[in-house]
Length: 71
Image (cartoon, rainbow, N blue to C red; front, side):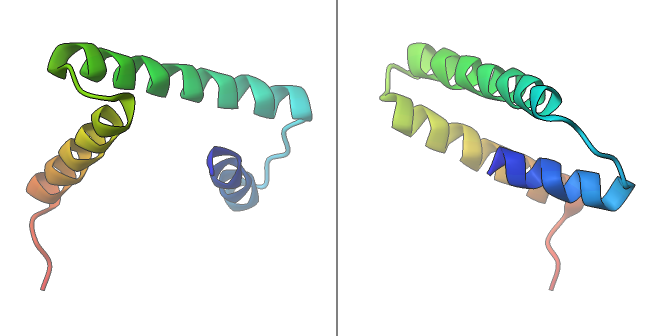
């Protein structure tokens, strides 16, 4: 999924990244995501899967609050 987003960015900006650049960017994002989920797992004492779900719900709630509800 992450690499698909990179492809969309590259297509939209007419940039081309080599495999090393893609892997470096992907690893940075995946490590940050893992740390966030791990912190939630330890804080809430829930499974990693549930921690990821909690983070996702928090992000959707935040975006909804910032943008407001659209009809």
